[in-house]
Image 1 (cartoon, rainbow, N blue to C red):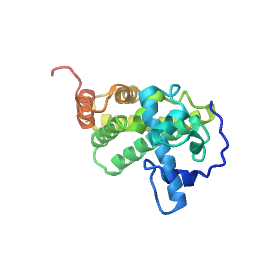
Image 2 (cartoon, rainbow, N blue to C red):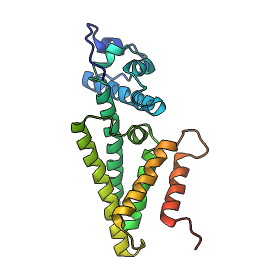
Image 3 (cartoon, rainbow, N blue to C red):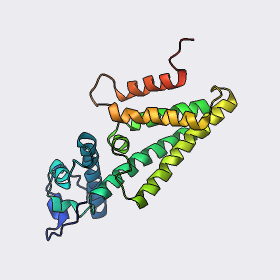
Image 4 (tube, one colour):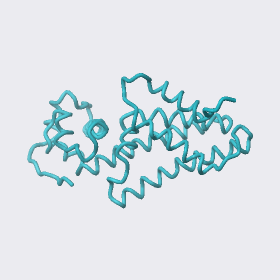
Length: 218
């Protein structure tokens, strides 16, 4: 694990000169915007190279700043990974909650949640969540992230069970069905490549069709 390095350089002064870093009028907003830039750059590099193969030097180089400058915004590489994974999970939670709030049948809500999930794992933070995983994070932080993941899993189980009860889904074990749905959609984040044959929307549409309708000819 990389340890913090002390520097006499005032980070805010140096960062304002870097065009890749957001600039705002208010210092608290500026600091948060630049911390977000660190996370975004890190998520991209973790996805491209892997967590262990990415150093703080790599992240600093991607942003065009010095390594000591990063320590004004983050403590170490694990904190960066934790921030990336948290953002990926929060995007999923927000999307699932919005789908549920929109109402409709259990099938409507399940389909909307699956679309959200499939779309987010093709984005930097969602892809980082899937490709890197939480096993790289210390045990105390890992427990928090697994709790959030469990909440997503239980929402899928709830909607599957409700769909079976409504008659829109075939009788099944909601727990196993949720595992299959979550596993299939998560795997998109491992094989998807931006600029490939299919757009994120086409990937989501085809995966949902296969998961919901199956592959057997009826």
